[in-house]
Length: 634
Picture (cartoon, rainbow, N blue to C red):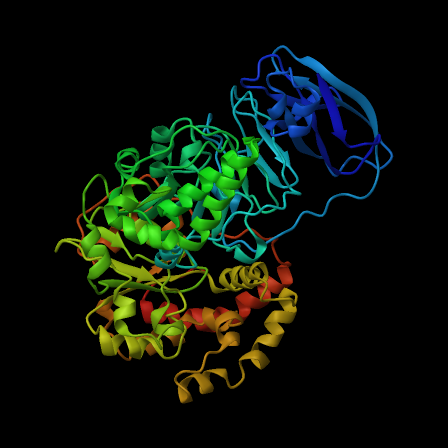
């Protein structure tokens, strides 16, 4: 028995909701598929509560949960007034036809919302089966679908499921997740595993949002056990109310370990005493001991329960879940009274239970951990939480020269521990904070382990060299320099992507002098003055490396600076990293995972603009070559 409630007419838009009900003779694992012009296109979620259908068909065993719904997002290349054939099947293997009709396409294409991102998704994604760049491919068991601009990387039996018009949003991040995000910092790339429908005001440009459904701001849809990401590509992983919905949580934990960088943080919040909530399915509730076992590859920082896990919430969820199934008025009133009492007095109940009682009856549990270095337990939770440390080295710039890649290559070494927050920017943007704030960003480690950070604005900021020297006069400094003409162009497109630049490249270069007039003077005279223009519009100024290096060498001897060329890093990474290891007095270490991080894609400028930049930088490059005693070939 089948009925389509919506759409009610034979006209559809580029984004159309399909919903209705279907009473199956066998309710288990009902899968509905929508076919577009004879081809499988999207799935419809079955099992929604339909009391109206149950009342109409009281003798049908599965009528109460016969509801289905889903959305059809048509490709933009479909023309208005096109006739479209729609079919709905139950069970893709047997293809039991439930519905078919012709529809006419009306309206305009759907303008899907966009957001700022600090990562390039194409550089992170791989096909889980073949290991190559993720794209629609013919590898068995790994179809990759595209809906809008969102890739769907799915098991062979799955089809994309769209929820673009969903109005119910995911809860804001919990205190535990916010704490981890603060440790990672705004420049660390984080995976929100099972993000759900994130509200626009809570979106963060450094977070990649993954789910099994496509919501408005979903970056990747995935249902495969093997995750579609490169090894060691995320600085952090967060997940809230997801692990109870995983059919193979141990396998998923292994995958999360694989894609997290060494030293990266993970935070998992999942269900314990919660009722069945199949969205899309519910497999395992977990004690904190069980969650620790599942995540045993990670070194534990903290685990337990937060106030939003307290028993009063668990009891309220149980009452809310059974409410719709209670028909007897006396029980309805009693449950309503209990629920109202818990809202009013639940906090007192939670306190009366004590710590142990709250843990025994908790609605959920959490785990925070860190990825180990080659299996070595370098860190402990006590050290991470309570001790302040100091850096042994700093990568000070230059911006858009590959500093992110250099830092990620360096922390692959088993004797190098990364800072707990990426690109801390203490000495340039956060110098109003206490020194303890800065030193808390580094883990305590054994005597043979070193740590440091990379903040590429340090090199060009006029005050940073002196600030660092006054606090860490013996610190080792690493500088990475790139052909300044290419750096200028990359810097410009970086600011365009961030939304800071609206001028064309020639206009931005021409405007640089006026934008910077008086800025350095203000920064020096008023030590707390922040110059937006100096941070973002120093396109050519940052390429005059000789001036910046001379400022640093007013304070630090040459022996404390290692100056490298970006071209050498990417054409001969092993030899370049050997120089870095020797400079930091580390034993030799070899890695095959030398990938480019945080690289931007942009169209090449005209030859005239490029040649103008080459000529502009030529005298500065000559001075630099003489100063360093090298042939730059720029």
